[in-house]
Length: 58
Image (cartoon, helix red, strand yellow):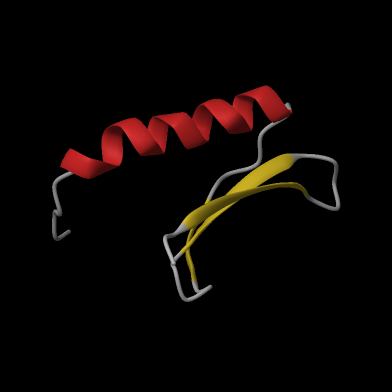
């Protein structure tokens, strides 16, 4: 099974998303967004930018 993004409203009324691996493990969690549209834009940004993202040790 492929990974998936889950979009949800947290207890404080903000929107967040989490990225889950195919096995259901959470591998990334977003910041809090004030609107659902902003959270959806965050998901699209991850989809667009992550495939070529460099791994940098800090």
